[in-house]
Length: 192
Image (cartoon, rainbow, N blue to C red; front, top):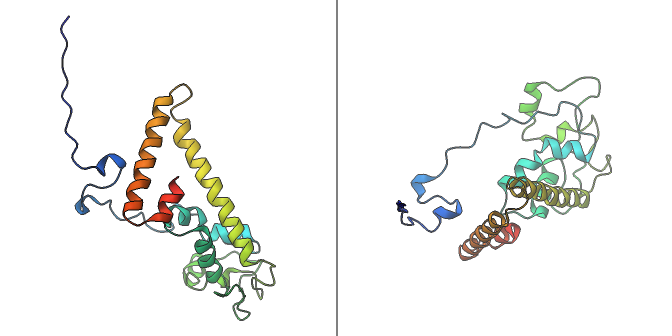
């Protein structure tokens, strides 16, 4: 029986095997257009769930890996009328009415003043939402989101393929080590 020997390519860049771009020229293209996949909330944001959906929390958790959950919660808190010290700016009151849906123009106009998307005349204090509520919700969503992503990636191999899981774990450890070397400690901690 005759065997054919297949040649392997030599490793080009140690970061290439980890999904990192080999050079700055190989960076991915620009992100997709904003609001392309996100369905806008057109009703008054009367509860924490609606506010987080309007703030595109899932997208933020993916894009802001270097921030911790508290930092993301603080950013959203301030966008919707909170203050940096955890209080509420009482002058930032909502303008949306229950009787009518928001138009595309209103959504664009309130992009920088998102507290105006709250129910008419109300603020975060009136809705009884605190910064701690934001922080707890973001932590919970972050954990659930990471868990679901892990199931999607791990579940694709199916049972009985421990080699695949082992290689993914090795890759994650290597990636975390490289991020540590680059000084991105919080990102490395979130990977592991």
